[in-house]
Length: 169
Image (tube, rainbow, N blue to C red; front, side, top):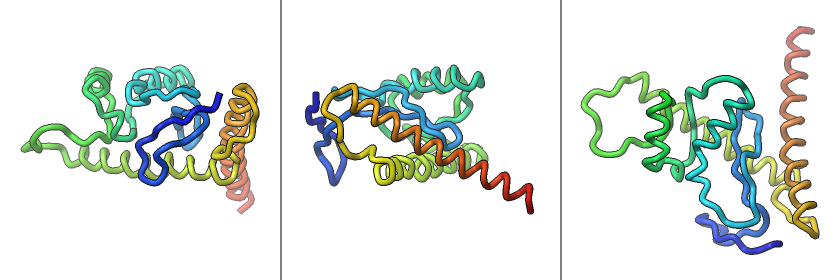
């Protein structure tokens, strides 16, 4: 079940194990799609938005996503739904772009880069998501889900502890 998946990364051209498409809501990771075969996550933005809306019951207003998601279909979908993104604009710079919109894009992009990429590193380093330990696909999937959701539990516990400390103070 373990086949090499070629990735477009600088330091690791080939990785093994499942490929995971995560979404994050307020710092908590959810697995939108995972597969042991290579797939293009850039075409899954619509499913990610629908998944988040089904989880929260709230319409998505802002999306911070990697540049692989900035294809024409995703741009059109976001425009139609009124979703603000961090995607770099195509074509010449507009003569008049709202300062507020420009700032929002920058903030969304920075948050995505720090929070989402940081969570991947945290999950791989502290919750064994970066190592293959199982002997079959089912066990590997179970360990992957367990690692990501253990990291989520740690985040929620830290938030609760911070709230409790505020009440005491």
